[in-house]
Length: 216
Length: 216
DNA sequence: ATGAATCAAGACTCGTCAGTCCAGAAATGG
DNA sequence: CCATTTCTGGACTGACGAGTCTTGATTCAT
Image 1 (tube, protein in one colour):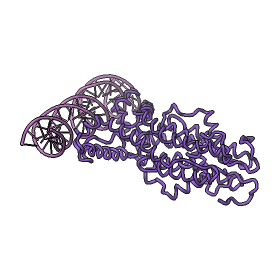
Image 2 (tube, chains in turn cyan, green, blue, yellow; image 1 turned 45 degrees about the horizontal axis):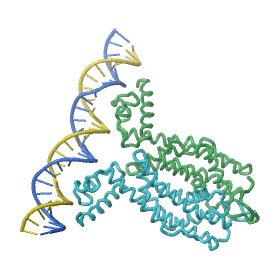
Image 3 (cartoon, helix red, strand yellow; image 1 turned 90 degrees about the horizontal axis):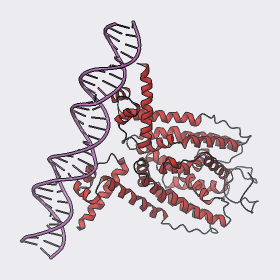
Image 4 (cartoon, chains in turn brown, yellow, red, green; image 1 turned 45 degrees about the vertical axis):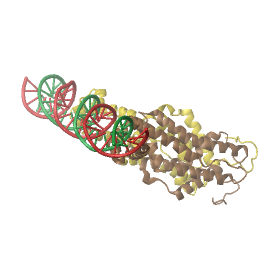
């Protein structure tokens, strides 16, 4: 193996990633990938074997790569020391990792390919939402046993919190394109309001029949 | 126009719908559509002009058709008479309309075609989630001014409730296929828990330091 | 009944794209 | 410097699918 071989391979993967995420599987041609990264089509085939194989390698790499990003901030939380602030930080990090052109593009791509490659979507589900929610569920369970939360079903409560906070922006990004992705400030506002609702609900406080703003 | 023409047209639309929803735009051929509904390809072209046009007509019809289904149960709510029961009924109806093989298939299809037809996805967003949330927001605002809720931003609260209740099942359906669609009982459980959280939150009640199960 | 329109069946064109082949250039290793 | 391996550019094949065309059958209105 020549040393330049690796660089070509990486360049090919980058070009393929860009094109697949931008326009979907079918509309990308091996010729266009080869052209973009300045590599002969033959080399593409000697590295990856087929268009499908290149696609699969790319998507699975991207899929497991994300998991590291999302979970890298170790989710250790001390229930007695500002549980809400810790949850907030975790959720903001989560949203910033997911609401990214790469990730939402990957979601679109995999969803569109579901009829052809259901195992890809299943893998993305396992490494993405499922893991994130399981992660959250652990924390919810901890807060529950510390008496900070009353969640009969931590798994479900975690899912509710997760989608309460990222359902709207993710859905918008999926259907309106990357231009609809929220910026940092919007993400923080989204998380703050969701946590408020998650802990306190929206029913009027029994002892507080007046206007709604309550001290942080 | 011959009278049998209309029947053929309908049959063609049904066959096309089935195939597009099942396997996506690219993998469906005009020949396969013609074969499924027993019609000559020529007739297909005389009716719809092109594959793309057939696809667009189909998807837009499906898109605006759903809106009628979802909004047909008139969302009139009396805030003084069991607001939670009314909300529950509305949300259950919403979920049952959306968590359907046709609708989630349509979502997958449109998301996969986003690079080619962003206006389709935008239309589906307008007629689907956006309308449903605006609908909910109206009710939330009503409950808010009736003193049953304290929601500073009814639009956002409605979005939170909406995704809290349908984020998880919709996401699962999108990535795990129609087999992951919830049945009626699961939908009702989902709605009940979400409403509980929406009104009461999960923080322990100040006056209730004991175990968590509270009377319905 | 008869003429005009519509439809069926399938052959046909044309473009596209995955994948292969080949002849030569360039890098590598000894 | 030479033999070997890898890369390149491009030509080539084979399949497939959108859209057209032809020919003959069927339906309808009068």
